[in-house]
Length: 289
Image 1 (cartoon, helix red, strand yellow):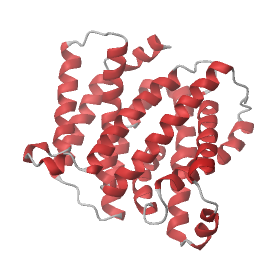
Image 2: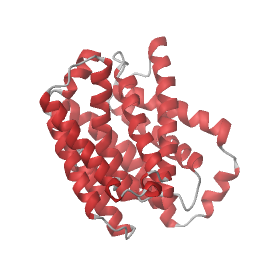
Image 3: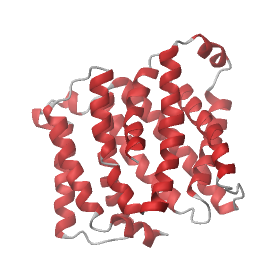
């Protein structure tokens, strides 16, 4: 689980490197395409069934659109901004946004402890965005907007996915990757891509391998196995390693500077997430199902 979370954090670094080679549509196409192909052996090893019903198929279509949009926004945010900041901001804001959206959908009363956690998380996010310098151009920069949109899209994807209760989570993910790959190929991919990538150097292939095979197929598989072995609440604590690894790896491999506001904001949001998780965040998912 620790290695998987490090790879999730590393994916922000990988995408930053890959922005110098291909555009957002090509990256999402290659990442999802390679990922679903690499998942096939896992299906046979665990004897997972490919059969789905009509309702599940509809949810898969919706999830495919959301995941594709999220991945494109993710790419654009990293392209215009820094990988470490994006990895810290988005991965810490996603659980907070998920909690708020679920509480709103289920009309849950927000207690004093919930309120404290949300205020702390909000302070952390605002600090990471460096709003205290009151520079509107910096606060509303392209990368910040992209990262904030991404942090809203992922909770929506999570909630849509949670509705698919009649299908294994990995099977659901597999079909989402397949449909997203097919959609991107027919509407946004030029066949010249397959010729161009053969001319790219080892850095491209290394980062593509990590972001697709290790960060997506391997890490996601371990995450789902961990849920079955350890439980959702226990596994969720490992996610705190993602923003930390994104910041550290970005500093090491991209020479990105880690500002004090980013560190302080990350610590505040991680504490907020911890409090929210201990206040039965995942019970809302059970209610939803």
